[in-house]
Figure (cartoon, each protein chain N blue to C red):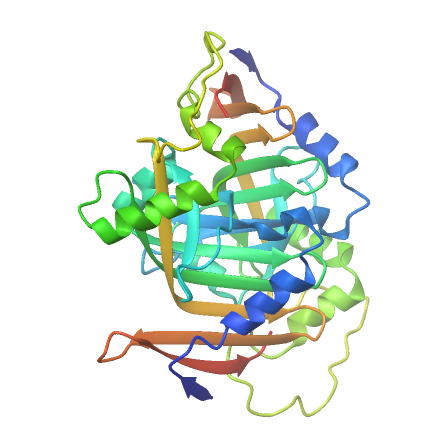
Length: 198
Length: 198
């Protein structure tokens, strides 16, 4: 068992992203939440990088999706990220901060704006579309337009997952490592890692 | 909106499995559950086919894994199955029946045995390995052996997921269909489907 103040799983994850970067889907993972009826929910989302140079994981979503209701009910999520070429799995669990346009923290609003402008115009267009998962009655009356210089729509929401446990499994070497953390006195996470049976 | 007593999502799923069958990982999906601490869990598992010719989904697992504790606490799961080549996602939620060797139902025990013998010898060997996710202290003292004619080990467990909702998303055609069901008077599920905004 080792201990360190830097997240020791991050270089493993960056290595896997690099090793699988020729695959478009290598930046997709599955995000599990708990619904307000206390049942599990699971969907594919896109990895939008780490917050600043830290360990927190960024995900963009629409405020009108059910995962927002889920996270208001239970603010925890578990990512399952399987790398199809290197046969590696990362299970990353932690608390999720939901940052929409009503957030009172100006630093968080700035981060949300940064994530908006980091999106392609095509991705931004999704947030102007009709409400997801409601019945299609009529086709949209007009193609929506979007000014590339204008900031996030009300529907744009940034999720910031702060990992507190990472379970790494390598199916080629048949090795498994579990990383756990607790916030230390100065607010930094102190990570420990343990090699366990696969 | 249409209605039918046969599961109308099944031909879509079989089509996706077929279209992606050149990829080894096309039979892998992510299974979300809720832990006893009411937090979400998520991991990759292998699709082991449908029960008989029905709609229920078979998964093999080890009784010593945490998903068994999760399912005892909350017997529901959501599968997220993303097909990387055809850009299709199936979210399949339902109740999970956990069938281990102590199950009192002889028909279920027979199904468990059938699933055991349907596994490769290499897969069966996994169930003789040391307890998953506990610290590695010593290497195994001897390589375990397994008689191919002998039935399931105590650690072998069959999960049977009975879908009650399927959310299908096609990212190429940008179409989304939600299938929902309720058991009808004779025990068969009555499915309805609706085209919704993606």
